Image (cartoon, one colour):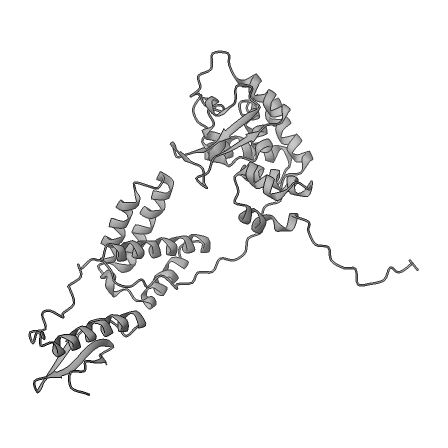
Amino acid sequence: MPKGTVNIEVFKDRLRLAWSWQGKRFWLYIGLPDTKPNRKAAEIKARTIELDITSNNFDPSLTKYKPQKKESISVTELFNRFTEHKKRTISIGTLAKYVGLQKHIETFFRNKNAIAVSETVAENFRDYLTQKLEPVTVRERIIMMNACWEWGQKKKLVTENPWTDIKTSVPPKQRPQPFTRAEITAIVHKFRSDQNLSNYADYVEFKFGVGLRTGEAAALLWRHCSSECDRIWIGESLGNGQRKSTKTNKARTVPLTPRLQQLLLNRRASDFSPDDLIFTSTSGFAIDSKNFCNRYWKPALAELGIDYRRPYTTRHTLISHGLEAGMNPVAIASLTGHDVRTLYENYAGLVNPPQLPDLLPVFAPV
């Protein structure tokens, strides 16, 4: 090794620097595994020492060159801090997912230090979650772990992110069949004619007619409606008693059909308040989606002999019928609040669907 040159070595799977100065051998243990990013950091440290040797500023105690000690933090504590950070910007429903993941973290990692989590350990945790959760939920939780480590890196609590390349697979899931026009008519008539269901008749028809997300329909107030009830502004969602922005954080104004306009005009009281809910439960409060589905929607479909699909399928139904009727997908996306790309990805089969070629000649019957 030439005089004054600092060499990078691997010792016990960790990087260290080695050099000589005034006839004495020196080693500086970096304490990091041999990876490309860590080698770059080691090279920078090596060049710093070489420059100090050349300029007679070398510190033989090595205090100047030793890595700064990182705060020792466990995986559990890191994720707890991350959850506290996220509390300010996420909904109650999303927060429940973080709390649920905290329990799995405590069970699996116990007191393990966050900087000791390698990619192999991360994969083991993914496999552990796979035994307990649905594939789509596992993918969502791994995304949360990755976001936690990215935040930890910004806060200088961890150096590397072992979650970046952790793969999760979600099997394809067939979309529910949209309701047919006959089924839509039967469902709306059932809600209008049945005394136990009639409170929700306008709500059901409006969901079919506008293709609202469940939370968007529950959040509608009279001030969101134009004075003539011919347009509705959709920019808020209601879930778990919390009012927030729409799923895409974008608002839209939807022009209503004469039928839906009249539905709202008939529903609006003469002494209405702009902050009153348009659609309410039988007790006058905001509609709870689970309660509505279990107590009213499921029994109604069962009595009609219609295959069960959740109320959210009313949105899928509007989009499907619109595309099959030849409506412009961009126009539909603007009405339903979809990202255009997402709409094409999810409903591509309905946009000018391809036809299979008939490879066999037509045979006359024998």
